[in-house]
Length: 133
Image (cartoon, rainbow, N blue to C red; front, side, top):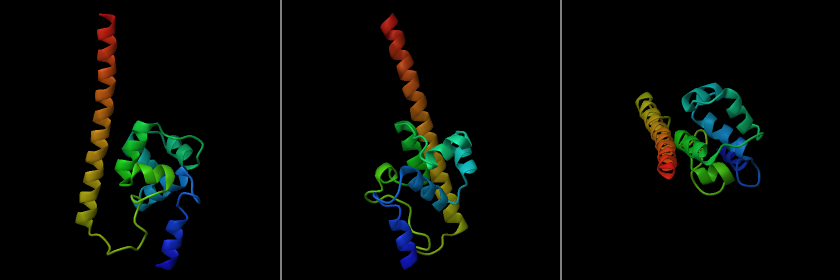
């Protein structure tokens, strides 16, 4: 357990980058980069660029990622506060049923974020149309 706590400390504010924390959160959900990209509707190269700190997601994408990976946006950005993934081995192993329920919750969160993105785009189009009229 001490080793696991040390590993988690490596992802604190001063010791890790956004990309490090993204990779940790993804791995804690047992997802590959390919699986995460597919679930978020992104290219694998986009996930790789984020994890290697070559680029960073926009705010709306960050919200989607945090919700999908069950971490807080603040932790993902800074490593501060609560909201990061639980250390490996913490607590009891979860059942297949619980894992399926958690996956369904992630899918619903992702759907909500995507729906909000669509609503925002439609609202912008509507405002532009109102300005022209």
